[in-house]
View 1 (cartoon, rainbow, N blue to C red):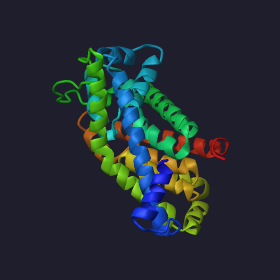
View 2 (view 1 turned 60 degrees about the vertical axis):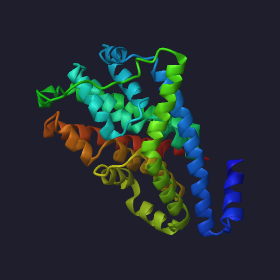
View 3 (view 1 turned 135 degrees about the vertical axis):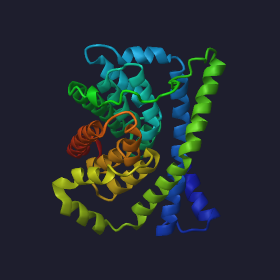
View 4 (view 1 turned 120 degrees about the horizontal axis):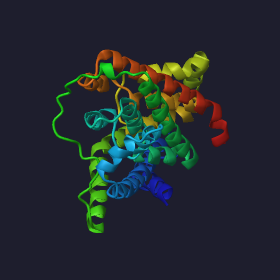
Length: 320
């Protein structure tokens, strides 16, 4: 139905030839923008309602569980919170202030920008649910493993003693008691998040449509062949200094993949931009010394590269 509407809009309303490059680009843009927006609102609403049932204090207790379960709880909580790397930092600070283990808090900080409802929706819309589920699982595992490694390195000496934090961050809508309150919170969350990322969705889909229809296949093939096995670390290192919302980066990664860039290479580029950035490093400097920031970036970068190679190795089993 949506595809029919997009073609009608392009051909009958805008009077463009759907077979032309420009007509195909516009159709791609309208179709994906509407599809993504509807899916985003629906899933963010559902996740928002679910979170009203989980008090913030319970989340803190879960993150302090022994035997490695705290890392799992932190990574899963990061996966269901709709934050970018910089937006996750205030909650990261809150966990540190509350006395949560350092490695556990890093598990949250790594997973939160990588895996959330709108990233999963975007990937499912383009790749299908198998790849989206594998990406979500790998992002959670990446957070757990990197957090565990950082925790075992005993890096607490690099934390600034007085972080100057004031107040606390509301992790859930614990005040919601009735179904009306919960549904309202879910809807408000969906509207709030969409109001913050809609421009990134549009920009990302527009750029993805342009890449899909205007970037020559021969150019992509030449770059991919010239970098060979080094494409994953190069894509990751290029992405690390950059900052952007996953809502904008996912469509670009998809367009690169559709042009022939290996799946893991495209996702490593996206994950590096989402999880690590210069603005994030500047914000983290308030709570930790430069040595710890460099170690955190280094461990996470290695983890992203490993994940990229994994996706390159298995993409043929999930995409036919």
